[in-house]
Amino acid sequence: MAYKTLVVDDEPLAREVIESYLSQMGDFELVASCKNAIEANEVLNRENIDLMFLDINMPQVSGIEFLESLKNPPSIIFTTAHSEHAVKAYELDVIDYLMKPVPLDRFMKATNKFIERQGPIQDSEEDFFFVKADKKLVKVHFDEILYIEGLKDYVIIRKDIKRIITLQTMKSLEQKLPSQIFMRIHRSYIVNISKIKAVVGNSVEIIEKGQTKHLPVGKNYKDDLHQIINARRL
Image: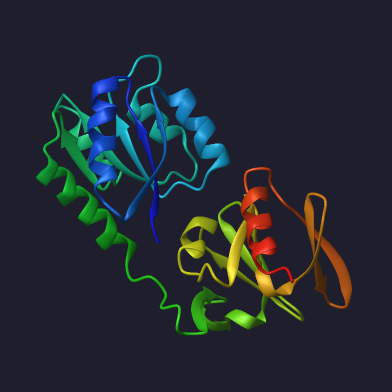
């Protein structure tokens, strides 16, 4: 699994350096490279970003101001030519603080810290995982799940006869789910592919409690959905 990555810096050369480093590392997928916070915010609104390389000293909106404005930010590695923001950066619990020009060995140390913080990814050979709900750890089997719905800081795991509500983000849960079984179809929905009964326009049909339910398919996920569906057509 490649971590989806965003680079934000007003200096073209600084962006090129980070982009070059990322291209040499198979664990990361560069989703976009932006020159300011406005462009980056648009990307975050449509993409599920795991890690953002964020310059601090940018015009209009600084990297720190931008980070503080985000309700559910991705993991952050600050990049800057100035050292005076280091204390503030660590107060914001960023992964690392890289001084420009960023050497490759220092870049690799920062990305390794990010990967270590993610913890172990769920082994796809197992058919279950655990989530914290109702003050206990609840075991959930993959084949029990119809779909998963995001609701602010919570996710709702929908099963045929019950639901499980847990405090975490869609992004963190998506990272633990095997991609051959589950796929993101919308900012607010992850679906068990085997539970899809039909694809109709910009929605998929799921049978929930004996009733047909339509889940929306976001425009940024539509092509991926049809690619998977077409691969399984007879």
